[in-house]
Image 1 (cartoon, rainbow, N blue to C red):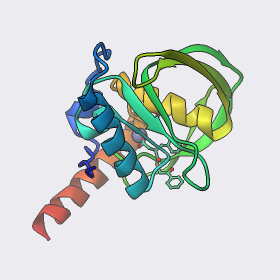
Image 2 (image 1 turned 120 degrees about the vertical axis):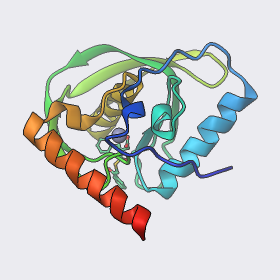
Image 3 (image 1 turned 180 degrees about the vertical axis):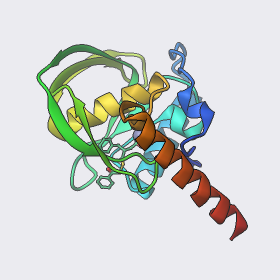
Length: 169
Ligand code: K1U
Ligand code: ZN
């Protein structure tokens, strides 16, 4: 198991679209394990492969209190959405920034497991938010892309300054 480095906004690699997984190999299982360890250590409630610079359609999610609700989704796709909810989102790739984002209240997602077997999940509340947030990462979208240009510029400036200070320390 290994902790993987997480890309930080405004790294352009976060805006790359991920490709579908076609081979369900031991390497894919290892990546899912490493991403899970990285998500729990951060700590976070989700992580998408592009955040660790792997541009494949794989996400891990666990919104439970006691880390017993892990879900690994390969090639996830939203096949139904209903209603609307607002949630104050964060992102491990945008440290220290939180903002209210409006998304579907309920989603149905189809995906494959690490063996390639298809399954579906129906979600509401935080799980629905998290699934939509992580699937956005697979399409090269970060939650700040939903904010005004002014807010995006402020966040970009703040994180670039933070990165420069960290590099100097
Ligand atoms: O994709 C990511 O960067 C993970 C992100 C997922 C997410 C959180 C909240 C709303 C939408 C999507 C995070 O996990 S940010 C950290 C966080 O929210 C959290 C951390 C510890 C405990 C509970 C939440
Ligand atoms: Zn994120």
